[in-house]
Length: 404
Image 1 (cartoon, rainbow, N blue to C red):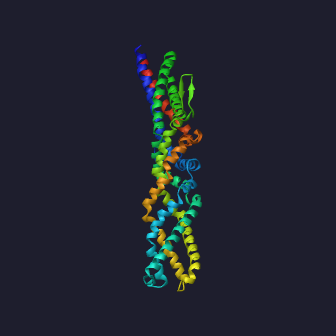
Image 2 (cartoon, one colour):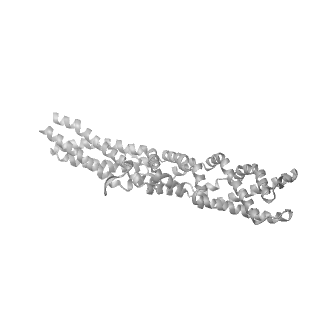
Image 3 (cartoon, rainbow, N blue to C red):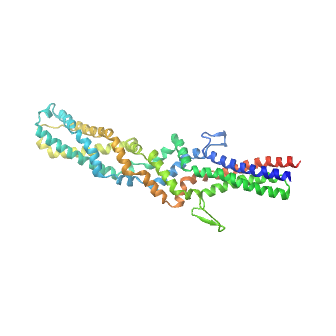
């Protein structure tokens, strides 16, 4: 009787520990180690780190295909508000622009012009500048898909040198699911231990312990992963218990966290501005600005040419265009804080992603986290079986000692 009580006190405790340890190890193997540990093909690197490019691509696909697109972003910006935002700053530059251009044509000419004429010219330039800003905005809005590479932005934000960001954000968003895996292993391991005692008491065979240990490790890891995602909708079992996969059940909460992360760390106004002003998109943007400014100046020059008392050479015209383009681009940094605030308010990334993600069909929603497990799910389960079997051997030795 004392041996039975000893087994009752030790076996369920050990199997609970086995279940917890194997599931804890499975979670750790998702994120650790950062660098490959092993020799040749035998070794391990954290699943999320090793598969970061693929997982980052999956996240980018979900966001751009189901949550928000460059076109939708561009359409949220109001042309009138954009004109006022940039136009007021360009207006303040009209005097130095006119003076600089006049100096190119004829040194000292701007100072010799009567004030009423200056005011008339300034007013005309300001009107033209605002029309130019609206024209540029209309063109850029139509090219939003080419200029705003959201997939590329999300991919680079979550992979390569930014893989640690992917790890941290995944841990934040799926923290309850990962804790569930660990705790569930302990609970299920305890139940298996009670069954194990019954089987051993009936059959009196020590080698059942390693076998049951393997089963505990395999089943707890497999079942815990399944219970995170299945069933996708609430389902009643045995007429007594209603259960829904933890991840789909938390869709609203996860959507809120996802929207916050996207708004504060990935699709930020600063990142979006950098996206369209640097690299290939930046070169294309510069060309659009230069071409639009050049065309507008050529059109207005042909209209005003008879009223200009001096000859404007092609070289003068080229320099005048360069001055205007330079002044326009020079104004952007000065209003960047206001522009970032405007983008944050108008795009409303956080609420947009939260709202759409919370209503996303469950199979699409599952892609956000399920990809981590799919690639190496069999390995995680097998590791659980190995660890469970190893502890089962120790249990068997304990039974032999007690039996001896």
